[in-house]
Length: 158
Image 1: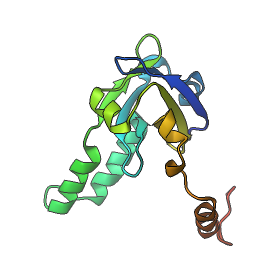
Image 2: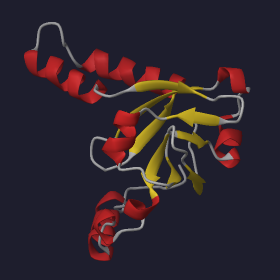
Image 3: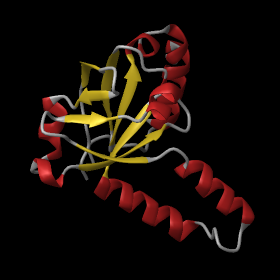
Image 4: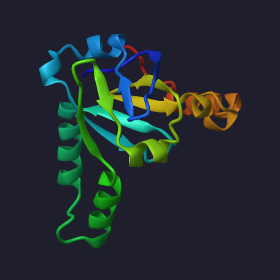
């Protein structure tokens, strides 16, 4: 399972193009012509998520096995909401992705973007929002959740 690590900054131009940091591109381990992504609004944060296409397809496969959008109205509405605003993107000749205006507006992108590797996804944040206090979990909440997740039976390196 591929995971992304690192925090990198890049500038976004007036047309919505932003360079994928070389460190993250290297972690993908594929030739440029095979680098295809799905870009979407995060469900819980004011950022965008960049999913490698193979990871996206695996996740959507799990979702469609769990849901029945043809016969269940709530499943149908959930899948629609989850997929709303998604965009397929790939790298241009200068290692940039094009973020459509709607997604730029949803994420509040201004000038500088922070790319953050978070497990199997890369989050894209407006730098001002990323560094603002309201985007952070309090230390106490972090410690409490860490204690809950890393209980006595959890082996981090297994």
